[in-house]
Amino acid sequence: MDYSKFIGRNSELFKASEIRELLKVVEARKVISFAGGYPDPQTLPRESLARIAYEVILNQGDKALQYAPTKGVTVFRETLLKFLRNVGVKVAEEDDVIVTTGSQQGLDLISRTIIDPGDYIITENPTYLAALSAFRTARPNIVGIPVDEYGMKTEVLEDRLRELRSQGRRVKFVYTIPVAHNPTGITMSLERKKHLVELASQFDFLIFEDDPYSFFVFDEADVTKLKTLDSEGRVVYLGTLSKILSPGLRIGWVLGHKQIIDVFERAKQSMDLQTSTLSQYIAKEAIERGVVAETIEGAKRTYRVKRDAMVESLSENMVENSWWVKPVGGLFIMVWLPEQIDTKEMLTEAANEGVVYVPGASFFVDGSGKNTMRLNFSYPKIEEIRTGVEIIGRVVKRRIKGG
Ligand SMILES: Cc1ncc(COP(=O)(O)O)c(C=O)c1O
Image (cartoon, rainbow, N blue to C red; front, side, top):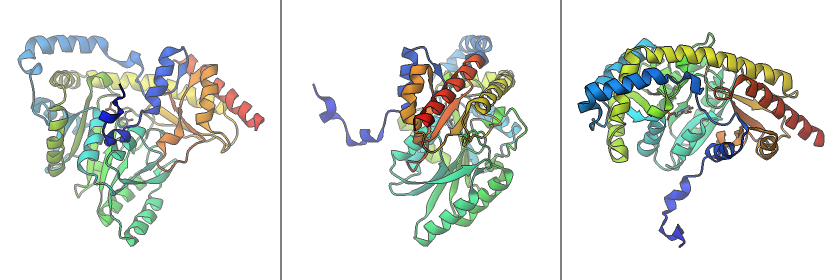
């Protein structure tokens, strides 16, 4: 039977993720993968989580195995707010927090409740692919702002805002990943953060600050939250335990003015009623017993070494006119190759030689970035990092020679 006659037009907005398609290939064959965004399995605190899960189910099972409020388990939300305050996130009196099923659900909530078709929204260019996919289902106009080693170029943003205003267009929000940005690994300077918050006030828009990575930066870096710089309640802050405890628990959150969180709560109710109660109870204990802090320390040590290995291998193997920023945290490095290289075309050749990456173009909002690729350094082993980068270097050189 042909099922297409049963499928709604909206389904066309949901495109298969290039990364997920790629990971299928990787699973089928033994190749080095720089593709996904998986934490190093060694950093996942298996024993602690097993103990906590056992105790939580046994001793608090009457609550932990039950339904919970859509906004999240109250005792977990309290623990979470304490944790966020401790890492320098300002929680204002009018703020509220909702626990989401990964921060990805926070992005989906933005798409469902904030964006009207035709709205103007702004992101870094490039930006997190799955944020673009989530936003696109609401049919906005997405304007991309270029980045350099200090993050989003806010002077370009200011020009674009003026231009849009002169055309009678209002920008609803800016979505940004200020620290250890996905896919570029770049961190925004404090000066630019301040400028962005000022622009939000001047041009009357919201900022969605997506912050999965600032908890485990490995070098000295400014991790001041936009949320903390904001005195007008314009910044809504998204976070996750995926990279600092376990992505499998699916615990994320959105912190912002209660008027917005109320809207999110209503929308979430029809999406999944609530995020897993059991995961929330486990996460609460993991934060309180210091398991998250330990995981962060372990991840920092592991990822610094892996990041260094990748940066070193890139310096040794990439051709002239390639560019990347050494990330202070996160899981990724984006490499800009010479203009004539198309990384999507090059991928089959690289995969045949034993390594895969994510071609960068899909992270760009404007069809540019064909000569870029995103490399993940958290998942592969050190030897794989060195070998994989060597292979990519060889393939690039061959392509350049071949014209
Ligand atoms: C910038 C960014 N936002 C959100 C997410 C989603 O993470 P999760 O849904 O696991 O919290 C990721 C995952 O890699 C990410 O890199």
